[in-house]
Length: 282
Image (cartoon, rainbow, N blue to C red):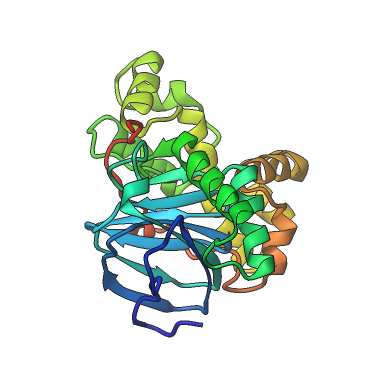
């Protein structure tokens, strides 16, 4: 349970074919800035991890991992409780993986293998069978869809005011046509800006914003029905379906983890995730 400003817990040997570290962070933990000679794939088993890289904060809720190439300085922090996995991958095995920090989708196959490693206490896969499983994890990471961050922002003068307005009111139900009109552009132009600058559609970005907002409210103990209404959903079932599709768990599961266990990143201006345009290249 690393305390605030703890020293990083690194693999003690060359992580071949990879090293799997399952860590538990208590609320208000900090990990000092550091760099590793190998790459790191970090993802939350529960809670939300925040990793600072080059002046940007990368957000990793369940089902999304933060990819950090070798020799890239980073630090970790979390306001709530976080249980997460850190996969160390040798630099020689990074061919085909992104050369810049980004967020990767985590496949069910990868999650199942790493859950099995955790259950059996496998830190360094050393049997032929476990090494084959480790190689599948690396292959799955190569195939994963990449984003600059889970909830990318943009400095684009067209998009920035719209994103800021939605972050202040994540339950606003007005559609892309309304927001395009406020910027004096067509809806098609707005949608094109979203794909080019955010790497995703306007609706997908809005749903991710609602997930982040929901996690903050659930963390505060608000009932699911209250959260659904606050985020503009006419029925709790519609909200629950969206939340489960994007996070892999129900809102009730997140809420039952209690204060500090559901989310560390609420949609406040000083907590907004900053990111450059979405990274899709390999």
